[in-house]
Image (cartoon, rainbow, N blue to C red; front, side, top):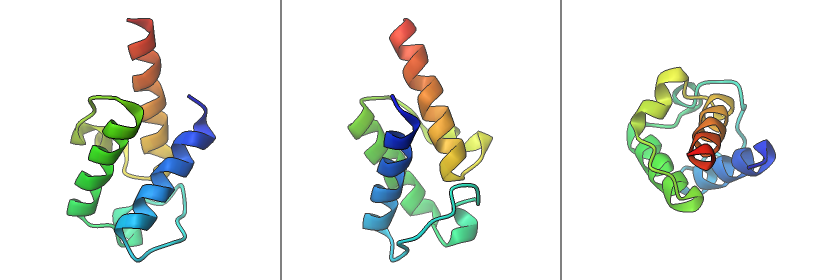
Amino acid sequence: MPDLLITEKIVEILSNISEIKIFDERTELFDQGINSLQMVILVDELNKYFDLGIGLEILAKGASIEAIAETLKKQAITRINL
């Protein structure tokens, strides 16, 4: 799963569920105006799109686009290796 695809999908989802259209990939999403409900929707949409079973624990390593993309990539690799 290419990093760019993951990052683009995260930005697409966030743009659709918020009024924010430009995001800094390294800044925490909460600091950019994304709220908890939007984070739950983001995780749900990512699960549907990438066919994963991730939960809100994905945010434990950081709630930036970069951190979420890295965690998703690791999840996908782990799933492929099973």
